[in-house]
Length: 383
Image 1 (cartoon, rainbow, N blue to C red):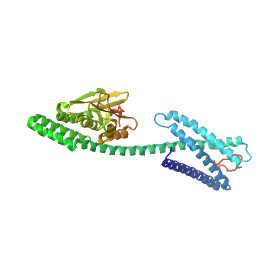
Image 2 (cartoon, one colour):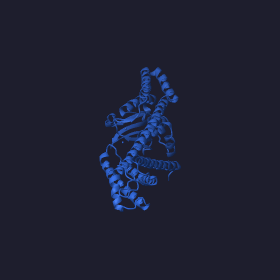
Image 3 (cartoon, helix red, strand yellow):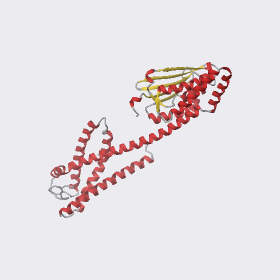
Image 4 (cartoon, rainbow, N blue to C red):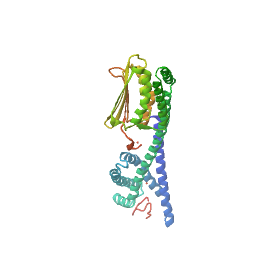
């Protein structure tokens, strides 16, 4: 069902098109009248205005079909030649049909009295068909221009939204990495290690520094190579593994063919943090997180899975609305539209699993216009 806004938009659109055809009739009628004045012929005001308003009304009635043709057969780079021939034949058909209807109406209201229908149609086609063909092509050109204009502004709007989401994602990533609880645990672990293993404490500080520096260095980038994303994740996981010791095992099953793939910046760390916070930290027994990346028929599938206690459907729904998962879902929709997959599930063996599927693209793929009398029966021509 159409919404009121869409109905109002459609009504305004056709009011504008009707106004445009009215101006079209007045413009060419005035041109005809000026030509009559210039060559000293009597002004046929009524006949000229009626003829041009008939013409404009017919084109107004044909406009929806022409717009549909423009939509169905776009003149884009891939199909401009074949669709151009379609529009060429369509312009001839539109010209013949419009001129045939024009002569029929003109005879019916008495603008043509002496010539037979076919004689008048022949004269009209000879003198007016080219103008009608140009009129059809003008509709197609204006339709494409409007479509390009609309798409340009839609891309601008989506770009602005993406920039906003990216900034939010960067802040969220930093916020999760600088989370007081996370910093407290890390610094506490370092404090403990200072008295037991100075080398491990120093290593933990180094990894924390690398993590923060990588976060700041990646600011402003929409996408990075999967290899860069995994390097960033490695710094984060080293800190967590020092914290959890034997309680945390990380399995990396990465298809080498996926490493050059472009993925959203900071896409994996929030998923891994969720897995650690909700799947690993609550348990005292050893647990594992598996990170997978495979190439599948033009897509890259990324998966983060833990073998923790799992969660009920209600808890999974609650987790999906948290900062990490909800932000990840929104960013995927902004970047890839409908060309992506995002799934939260619980494996049969227990735990929690998040699966992302995005198009496989690499850095090499690049970022996503003789005057005749109005009522002369010998050669009637509105023009």
